[in-house]
Structures are given as C-alpha cells and as structure tokens.
Length: 154
Image (cartoon, rainbow, N blue to C red; front, side, top):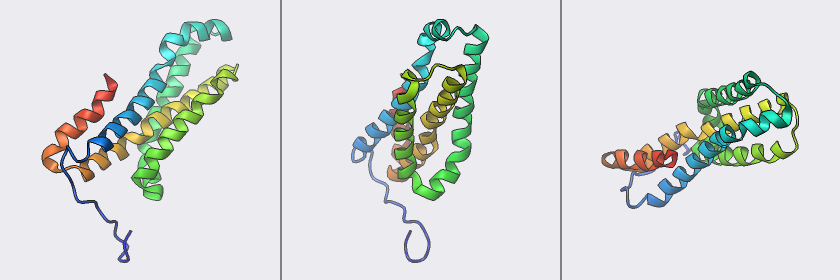
C-alpha cells in the first residue's frame, strides 16, 4: 500500500519476461493437484489398513472436496490480509505441512481432517495465482500465461 492507502499495481510485462514466475505458479498448482490426486490409487490400501468400507473411503474424498470448496470462498478474505504473494506461500507451506502427519494418523476421522486441510491448501492458491498472472502479464499475453498455469494439470 502507498501513502494514500491504495495498493500499488505492477506494470504488466510480456509473457517472456514473466516466464519464471509462470513456471513457479504452475509448480504450485502441480503441487496442490498431486497432493489431492495422490490418495485415489492408495485408497484400496488405506481401506485395508484402516478396515473401512468403500462408503467410508468415499466420505474421505468428500472431506477433501469440502476443503477444495472452502478455499476459493475464503481466499479473498485471506489474500486481503496477507496479499496474493502471502496466500501463495501459505498454500504451498500448508499443503506440505498437511501431508507430513499422514504416516502417523490411524483413524478415519484424523485422515478425513487432514484430507480436508489438503483440499483447502491445494486450492487456496488458485484465485491468487489467476490475479497475479493477470496483474503481472500484459493483457495480450493472458491466454499464454493462463495456459502455462493450467499445464500443471496434465
């Protein structure tokens, strides 16, 4: 913020000048995407280890999807407090930290809570990444910038 209380907006630059930033944002998207998709192929083993049914396993995915829904709803509130860069950092750190306790949790409720946090953290960065891309890159290059970001899903 400047002395008038208004936020300073960066001067948009070309796609080529911001390629490093785009690769970083795509990496964050990839991190969140893989963290969420990691559990699908592991679910039969998780079911056997915890002795839960298919419907209980489906409930775990519902918990993760609930977190995935809450993050974009809360991201405006969060980014208004810590700005977009802070939100991007929070998303990366929270995703990594939420994955650490999985090897120690043995209850369905504990895994459900962690999956909700992973879903939340993995999608928290999306609105801030889009805002950052559209603020940092010239309007004529928005399509290229957003495409690089979405490449992380492939």
